[in-house]
Length: 382
Image 1: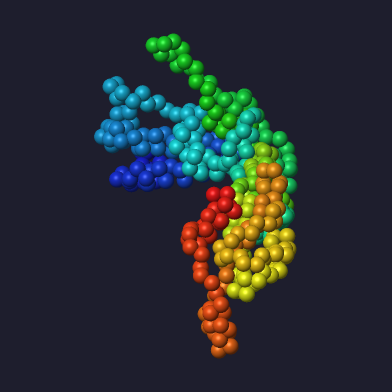
Image 2: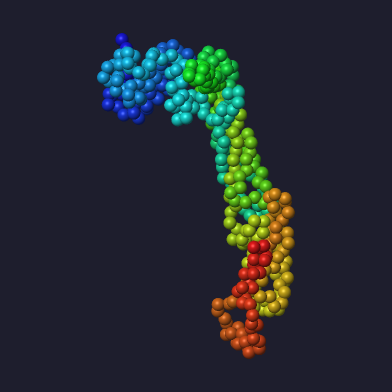
């Protein structure tokens, strides 16, 4: 006796569309032929739940079924062209609704499909933080990745003991199914991935116990990453073939490394150039001095000329960062700031008052502030 479709899916007659879909997905995953080693009873059950789902998911078919039963689907004038399912149609419906939602991928492992039916592993993305000193010289980092690696028990084949997968009976190993249909414009032939093997051309009836037929397992891998000199934040490095292993010896995905350069409190970075603010005293500005300033290459001596004005920019050629494209170094711009003490000792105050009596008039003309910004713009090439 034919079973009631609601009973087949284990749902009530007032079940929502979402409840029907969830019930079918659970049962279809349980009775899928590739999970039951070709068991005929499971295959029939799979076709039965798929048939019930295909009716109850469609509002018009469901309404006719609720009113007339199965006779309303196959009787004259029904207009649905409904007929008992074969395995190929049932698998096609399963792939249509769950191929991108984890149903089919949970069986076959997911990932992108490459040519020849082998599925490529997923790309893995990580973020690496580096210092400005590491940007100057380049560096190498060793990272541990928690991802998929080839199953050693089956040598990546997915078959217990490392054997070979059997040729798919539905497509003869081609991974494709051809369907022909007559139309007003003649015969149309469509080619789609085989729903039984997912386009791989093979099926596994004796899956490996370690990887459950996927040919890969979760594992830790150590990867060395070379960070080139001159790299900037938001640059990406792509390491081909260092991502997750593909199912059943499919090619590996890529490792995508997003680089973030940590802020260095000593410098402002402008491309390959660096700016360093140097504070000097009144006496150093007036008399001149020999000082040292930091750089990514170590301390650099700088000669402060006598009479220098606050805001003057001294440029040290080739003391910046290397260019990522041609390797030549940028410049280090030393922006001089005359430091004004906030508190004076009585002796300092006396000496400054004596100095004030001897100072000349401040020269008129272009404002010092405008001169300062012009010098900064010139130094940075703005």
